[in-house]
Length: 308
Image 1: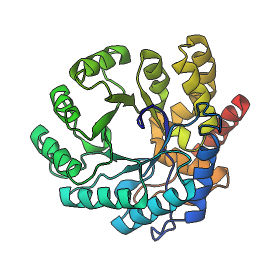
Image 2 (image 1 turned 90 degrees about the horizontal axis):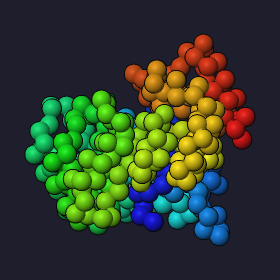
Image 3 (image 1 turned 135 degrees about the horizontal axis):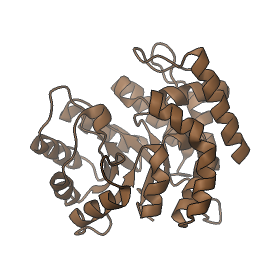
Image 4 (image 1 turned 90 degrees about the vertical axis):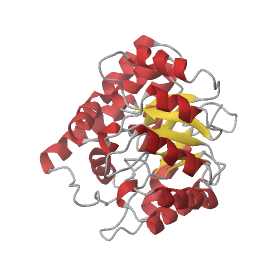
């Protein structure tokens, strides 16, 4: 199975108020994911860890802070679960440095979003990826996240990028205006020249539907903190068991409501605090959930506890 298949779990990156990585707290979160990973007999579990994704606050961390986070994670995980590292940054040369840093620290793959201030053209993003792919042999997943980058990959751009040797996958947002099966069909048609090109989705509340439709990957925020429960939902979807997906998904609904309202990062920081896994807060100016909404997060955790 390719690196970019199955359930990819994205944890927060706990830091203190000055941005220093809390290694102990990060390892506590990683241990939960590792325990939900493939067992010694090779049975399926969480298939990868997505370190320094949007939930991991990559855009708020310096290069040295990112280096430290990857080093801590790679040493702790020690190959038990593949490690995918986010490397998005404003400048192409900075992304190249981050790609090399991640490789040298022990990453297995890279996740690249076209972060920008000035709006980027399709050609500029293509050249950006070409330049980054040219400095590393690690497989790269395209991170199409218009909600944060304000850039949307055209189907033609995805086709061009998928032709690059080290571009191995794409992480897509949930489609707007059409069902996920139709979206997946269009993507497959454009990238059919590369059988190994993996197509996955983020936006947790719709990803079970994505797996049911035949997507390769669920890039999961909830999986970064509740990997065992997320794996149950993923397995049911991969097995094509619609009734079981619907049953399990009901336990997640309180979290899906919070995610849609506040974004996954804010909710996951609060949930980690509630579980006493971390006392970290998101980087300012991002504010944590208020008292009333923390109570809603407690109820969401209690709902998942009933799933087991």
